[in-house]
Amino acid sequence: MKLRKPIKVIYLSTYIPQKCGIATFTKDVTSAVNLINPKALAEIMAIVKENEKIDFPWEVKYKIDYNNIDSYIRAAEYVNNSCCDVVMIEHEFGIFGGFCGNYLTSFLKLVNKPKVMTCHTLIDDPNNEWGETFKEIVKHVDGITVMTNFSAKQLVKLYGINKNKITVIPHGTPNFTFDGTENFKKKKKLSGRLILGNINLLSENKGIDYSIEAVAKIAKIHPEVLYLVIGQTHPNILKTEGEKYRNKLKKKIKELGIGKNVKFINKYVSLEELCDWLKVIDFYITPYLDKQQSSSGALAYAVGAGKSCISTGYLYAEELLSQGRGVIEELLSPQAIANAVIEINKNPEKRKEIESKAYEYGRFMTWSSVALQHLDFFEDVIKRYEQEH
Image (cartoon, rainbow, N blue to C red; front, side, top):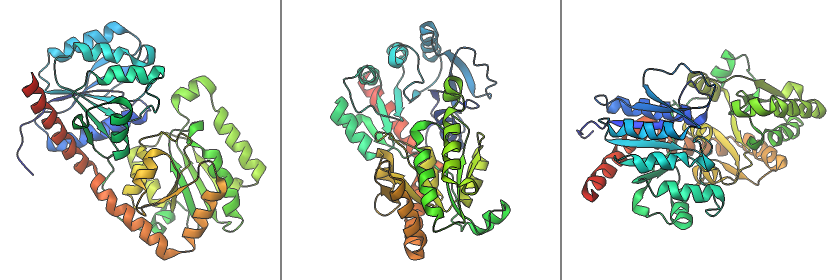
């Protein structure tokens, strides 16, 4: 490992214990970077919504009031008076306040330090109100990371961003061992079951109803199949709709007569629990409905664990599961999902090939590797910023 000067980074994001995929990602990436950059530990500026009373860990040094423009302005002053070398924004639509998140623009305009941003999702219409706001935001950053080559091309094509400002860094994963599932099934008292699963904050765009319909078809051939739906309902959905979607799924399960073949684990799982469940799962399913989704931590982890992954064709899945690392099936087809599970399960050599390719690719996605890539990215942006200023 090359010797490098410590880099002090302030991250602007949601953060644990907030129940949000970006919050978890930020914790994971900063923890990994801290291990190889220990003399300049990450500092977090957390976005907090009204009435959200959260006991954050020590690394959260500043809280930004989601819907208060003055809070973003004061945050920019805080950054300018700090000794940080670079500011990293973990960008997702809906995290930042103002019209389509434009309070972030006010923050970026005022910060006089190098600014970089991870784009967790892209809008495919640069001319709608979200796209126009995003265009304004990216004008004020000095470097951008995305998780796929396709997203990098889209930033150039749709938003006219200079490709030299863009770096592709994959979503990180734990450094899983490559194991069979049977011993782990015994621990969970699931021996002899064919386990399908996914681990997510539950919402309608995750397409779980299509997986449930697929399970009904699989159960006719494999009555031992069990589909694990792991994760609580997304907090934002819970506030507005309660458990409407989950209850709809339960009704469908009853109608299909597959109560013994589907199990809900309705809780927000820790990283340790997530890894334990992944070790049990034979087939990881992501039937997401949003074709434009450009990242998925859950799918990244499943690939890192060497799982047989079956997915609908959203952007992130198409790139991650290419070259035989998984199976992409047509959008919204329970029959296609069922066919893929049945065919791969009866072909052990094919399954072994898919899992081996996934696991091998996952070695480039371990958090330690991703942390090194982030530090290289920070160094490059800081150097370019100093030359231009």
